[in-house]
Length: 254
Image (cartoon, rainbow, N blue to C red; front, side):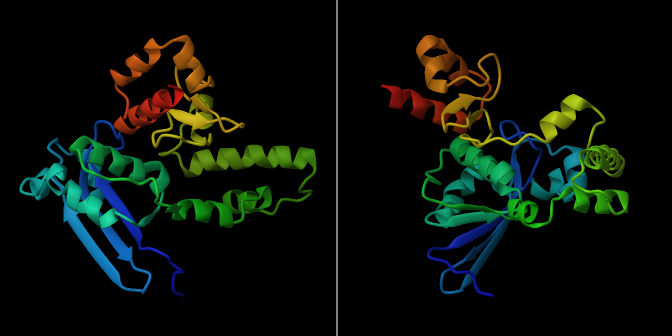
């Protein structure tokens, strides 16, 4: 099957020093550009992150400090990468939550001229999660290796849900914590405005804070009542893209 494209689509993936978009850095980027005529272009490059790669990260992607010590820094290649992405739609696996915000942060940090405003984003992981059967019966069969009888009776579904959770904790013991607060955060979905999820849309499509003392409150409302909160965020340890979003909201208010 050939993709039906109106403009190039770039599939990309990052390997990084860690998962924190503010403090971690890219050590490798690879991308495949699919053009509307079917032509393909690919590129892969190692990046010197200018910080040490933790052993736990090397254990995942097998890239060591020695491997990248003579590689270019991201600042040196940022504009070239941004040019390759220019005018393209973007795709990846878990890219909406990780790769896109991480790359955007690196672009801003390097002072590269990039603009994702007209790009459409495809996250293959989300398609997988939405298309594969997610019913309780399917989960019970997968995790408990049994058929759920009396499905859709409240009692049977309640007990089955409990059994599935217990089986998930056993199966993913290294990834999940047997802790209600952790599981609550792990299973929460938001409609992010900034890539890091500090600002989200509420049910009415209004931008609200998703952290701190003003969590759930309108960004515009908070900036009107407490103007210093904007300055606090701009001087604080927040992603550059988050600061870009709140600045746009503040200027919009004026």
